[in-house]
Length: 246
Image 1 (cartoon, one colour):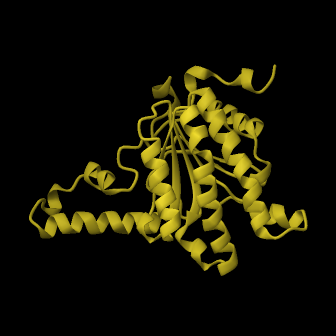
Image 2: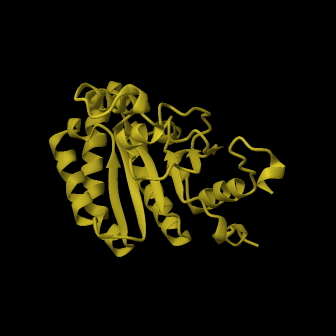
Image 3: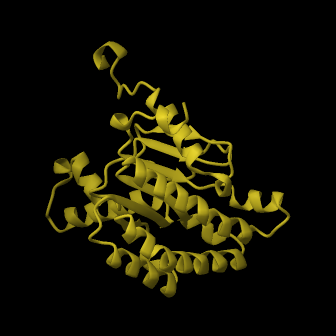
């Protein structure tokens, strides 16, 4: 039995999030500059997106660029932004062909103008697609997102739209950049690092975490299937006990 046959199609995670890590180390292993790793990571993005769409996963979120990534060497950052523009424009036809809608989360307006423009074009050109939603986390960090949500709610309090005692969890969730998107059931991180790296900290409160030793440029459908199979073998209790779940 191959890996795909081991997946229970009736018990798929509705939303998978991925921390795409290891591009730089992959490039170093191949004796090439870090940008070479980022370019080769695009194939992993394509395969993972297509595999999720084929399986019937409804949402896929990819951590593409964090707020902390601006601290990397300027040459690498510039190359990443250029690669994002090229990839977005090149892959729009593929997204439409597969009926995949593009969305993005993060402090998007602070992206370079060309990157921001290409992103908005991609979102606009795929907005009517319904099979799956691909979400890119760009200039994103959970600390930024949570602070931004607090500011939004504080403004509502200042404007007498709501009192502090009236604030509910739903109000906070609606102020996040992921408002309207279900929390991920499965979070995958590649490259063997066992960290969350400031990603979806509120949203992954009850997510299953899966750490793959594979560098992102080598991540393929087989590795995704392995993560989903592992996910389906876990018991998700949400604070209850096994007998209650049964």
